[in-house]
Length: 217
Image (cartoon, rainbow, N blue to C red):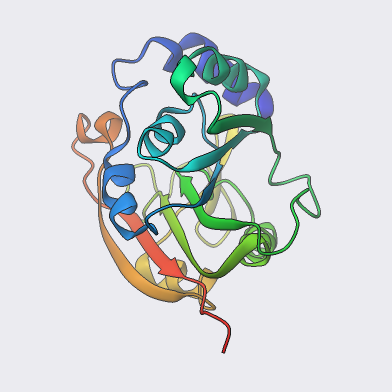
């Protein structure tokens, strides 16, 4: 999967007209964030959402698994954000325990990065997100939907999880999103998400989820 993402960043995403814009979901999710705090972005790609959060006063750890994305992201950090944004490699799939202490982050944010894994791995990732998020912290994620026209193509590996070309892809509905995130207190859940890339293809029904980790009593 790493090679497939490297090719996408080198051959397509690098010059896409939307690659330096904050995503539509980021502009929604930030409304739910605390006024300040430490944000972990998972699968940040070239860092456009990470830079958006840093511009709004957050300290951001921007992670991705591919060297190409990380190098492009580092090169795009303006001088005034270098003190508030760090770029680091993180492979969510192969890391059994992420290299972060429990309850480190005020926000964990994932835009189109949690839907590439089998069910067991997805549950493990959600468990790690729970572990590293502070009580009262915000968890925001955005994923593919079972309404996607690509759903059902390729080879089905397990329910709603397919091998399509060089990538494995999981497709969520609102019930699945709620199931994976069941320990969090839901604040937003629907299938009305959009991206600049997919809207051009007529796709307007991605899964949006925003929740909070319950505060300690």
